[in-house]
Amino acid sequence: MMQKQVRQMPGRIVGKTVDAEGKPGYVLTLVTREQYVRRERATSNICTSEALMALAAAVYLATLGKRGLRQVAELCYHKAHYAAEAIGKLKGYSLAFQPPFFKEFVIRCPVAPRKINHALFKEGIIGGLDISHIIDNGMLLCVTEVNTKQ
Image (spheres, rainbow, N blue to C red):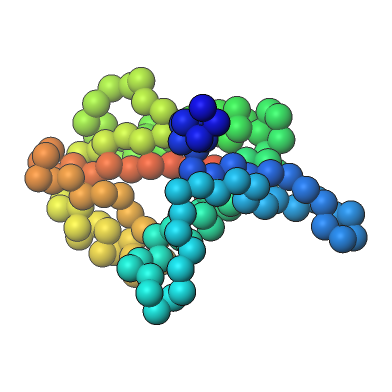
């Protein structure tokens, strides 16, 4: 019975602990369905990568606190709507779809999105996803909490 229940659990559970100096830390408390083998015998490193990403996500969420996730979501929403409105006012650009949307939206560009992305990349900016194969000169943009309006 216990083994059956364990298989229904997530592959990893992150726990909060304290280190030898009493500082808080996060550890993978339970890791199931993993095979830790010697590097030379391993067929992939996906498990290690997944564990690292799961731990990073858990630490980020924990640092946000009880209300943090909601605040980040609201920030993403407001920044995305601000960006959509600002881009929509630019000559030749328009929103492909009307709201509602959360933090991703599609714009129609006056030129091929690949050209825009190339110019943005030269400035150190990662542009949107070129979806011209779906929508003529369409670009999918996503706004997160990471950057400011500048």
